[in-house]
Amino acid sequence: MIIYNRTYIEQHKNSHEFKSVKKAFDWFIKHTYPTLNAQQKKKLKKAKRAHKKGHKLSIKRMKKILQTYGEFEVVYRFKAPG
Image (cartoon, rainbow, N blue to C red):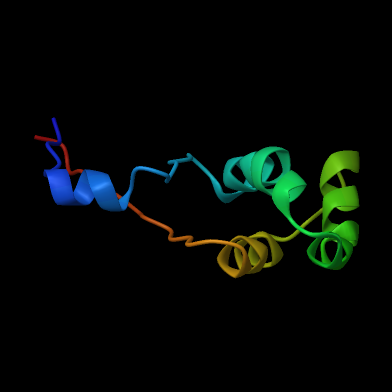
């Protein structure tokens, strides 16, 4: 069990956790993309279209977009048995 202190919770109250970069990008397209201005949306037009049509969009490109429009970090966890 993980226990977070109040400061950590306040700093991360608007953050979301995902199992993959693709799932984070899905959430971004559904929730953050609609709030962007027209100029920002124009920059993401090709990436959004590729994502919606199921075309290949690289992990590197998705990470770059997520980092541009918000705080994005990748966390790897390993727990040894026993």
